[in-house]
Every structure is written in structure tokens, then in C-alpha cells.
Image (cartoon, rainbow, N blue to C red; front, side, top):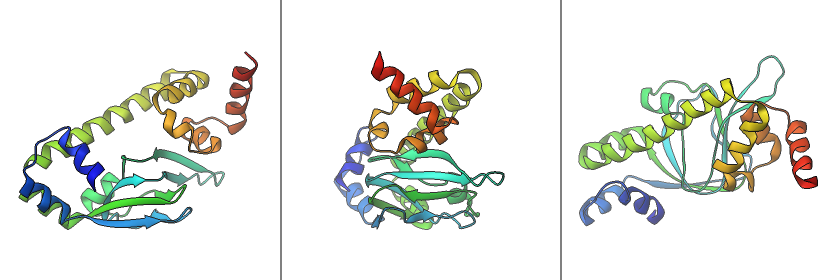
Length: 192
């Protein structure tokens, strides 16, 4: 809980009383490796903050049955289906633990109540959403304008902590390239 509060306090001020109120809305959850946080078709009932661990969000490609990675999330990141959570409609993707993952969670109803009781958190969550939107926009631009090798090197630079914790095939899926392609790039870099 303290890492989440520390993260929030970097963006907004909270009184001691507000911190106490904030804490009352959250529950802890642990997912074992392979366990699902959310499955396609379920309603996303909780927003989740990753205390430790790794999650992947993915859809299954109906043509080839492969996982198409939408996002990878590690310690101190958020993991949710924003559209499903905010509208309380069925999700179109899955979120699954890549390794044992400890979460802090808040239900949709509690989230709404928390924002009413602690007005400054509206600003914090707007900042989080703006950051997420910026990441999505960058991904669209890179997918449309850059070659696979450039996308891979940008991913290495931007997310070194993910690279060290996530299997290569998941990174390949996220980038829209084959795992073999990434292997070739890594071998080329080792021989240079």
C-alpha cells in the first residue's frame, strides 16, 4: 500500500485523514503464475495496482489461435480493462499473471465513492490516464511508421525492466513480430 500512496503523493497532496480513508477502499489479491485476473467476456469489476509481479493482457487471434499481446505490466503499474471497468460491460480481452503477482484492488463502486470523498484523486487518475493515452498513441505511431527492428530497440530503451522479466515471445507478440525475428536481432547484437 505504501508504494501506491508514495506514487500518488508525487502527483497530488493528501492529508493524513485522506490517506486513511484511501486505504480503507483497497483489498489485496495474489495471483499465481498463469492465473487470470480477467477473462474475455467477464466484466472488469476491479482496478488493479501491481505491487509486485507481471501481468499480460491479450486477445486470441481467431485466425491462428495465437495470443496478441495488448500490454505488459510490472511492479507499480496499473492493469485493468479501462473500458470494461468504467462502463461495467464485458471485456474483450484477458489479463493473466506471467509470474506470481501481488495486487491492490478497488471495486468499481468503491472507486466511485473514493473519488467523491477525496476530490484530489480525480486529478491523480486523470494524470495516470493521460500517461496511458500517450503510451497508446506512441504505440500506434511506431506500429504504423517504424520498421520492426526500430520498434524493438525503442522497446528495449523504454522498458528495460520488462525485457529482463518477460519471455521473448511475449515481447515479440506485443511488437507484432516473430520470436525468431527478435532472436536474430539479439544474436546480431551479441556478435557486434
